[in-house]
Length: 455
Image (cartoon, rainbow, N blue to C red; front, side):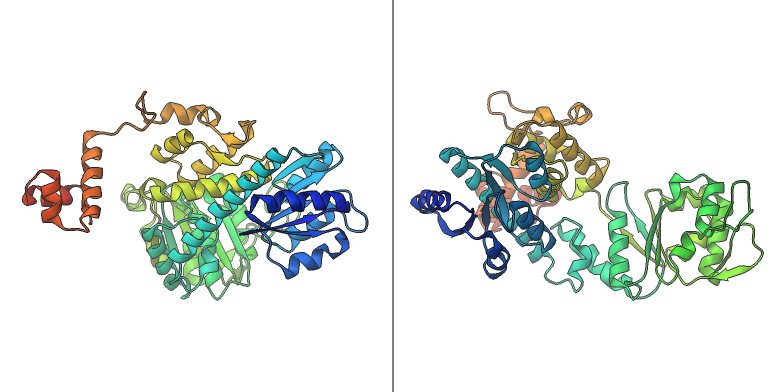
């Protein structure tokens, strides 16, 4: 039974809420008329939902919302107030309130919202539980907390990263754009012995070569026109810590030579200086290019490649971890609701089907941007297909049956699904499965191999 706390300085309102909620038989209800005791009550008891008045003496509703946010208290909040104040409503939503209702509230509307918020809470809890179970064998779980996945291959990558991160070697992270290379780099830093020092992330592809040299190595006063004072570069900022270089394949050959010297000798020259400086930095690099091909073309130095690639990590694209799409959608829905002060409660089934069918050339970053864009556009409390970006709809190869609204599949996909379902039904008994499917056992074994099915 879900636990609800109502805080209001009007005892009559509390009595009404108490009776109404208890009559549903679905909730355990507590009330508090003295808001000055709210902090202690929230600390002492685990509530699922807070019904909160805004205008109270001593401790206001906003004070309580700020306290919940600062202390990271795990509770959902619905604001019930006698004043229709748009600015106050926006402030409440920014502080994490799920909804803002003006008194007198409609009973049915309130009960509907309570049911929705608690169902969302249950879904989020289930998602977090699934992720927690998939990571139970990880030693450094917190290092990967920002990477939303329960994909077995990704978890194996995490286990490999844990082992690579502790020695002080350079690591090259491979993967398509938007696949989470910087998040892996941050995890490596957090696991390493350098975790208490700076983590400096640089996108090498965003700087012109001359500018990158200045930004990377720093410069002395007067080193070039406009250098009115000395400036530390990325290397010095990351001294004793970790320097992450994304899009390493974009570096020009002259800069590659200087970077190689840093890796080999642990020293560099500021622009405008003849004095070498020592630096103790671990370099992590990432690329979405095929550096082996770039080496053959003469665009990337072999000696630098082998210095950077002492260990390597390859991140699988989102299209190969489709089971994570729903988890990521829930995560981004919650994140961008808060960021945009929206109250979108769910994603429609039709939109979910579209999102699950798409291949995401931009990977997780693209999915994140799609959900953020849809939330900004949507004016209701549910994300619909019409909210999804136009380019996404244009590039989606998803088709639906006009009669059922269900996705159309190729014949091979239908056959694969049918074989998979029958094998699950027979608990892997291939002879029995072949009989049900009306094919020979040899034919079934061939199809299992063809579709890479593991009963």
